[in-house]
Image (cartoon, rainbow, N blue to C red; front, side, top):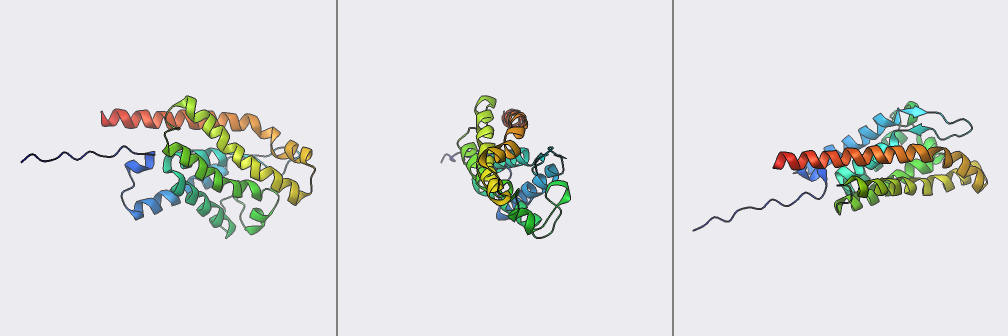
Length: 198
């Protein structure tokens, strides 16, 4: 009798290499929230804008691609909720529901659908080469802006053009740089993973 060889399924996202139980999934979700909180402390004020340049969106892109749609999205839900209830997780150690409901709250809320969509695309393999990952991470950040800028305009009672000047245009160069960093890091992680299996 010949024993059938067990073929390991190809991981859809990087986290599938380590996630074996629900406990692993919970730890990955909490890790995503904490990583986002850490990079949110990298903050640069933009003159004339209530929105700072932070490392948050880089964290959102990386964790979403690495964890997949559900874990990535839940990581951002956890991040937003933990900051809302008082943990100093937002930019410059800020916290509280007033930040979620305030002028910049739309960007925080935007992390959640952006993480889901980036994770979904990563599950289809779009994070494995830099040339596919770069437009994916640009698109992911555009989702955040698509929610954050109208929210800013509504809450701060700004004209659309003013909201774009304060909440979008100054952040385009940084978004492109963060997309490039995320694309290179994800590609490198996949290459290292393949070389370890070889």
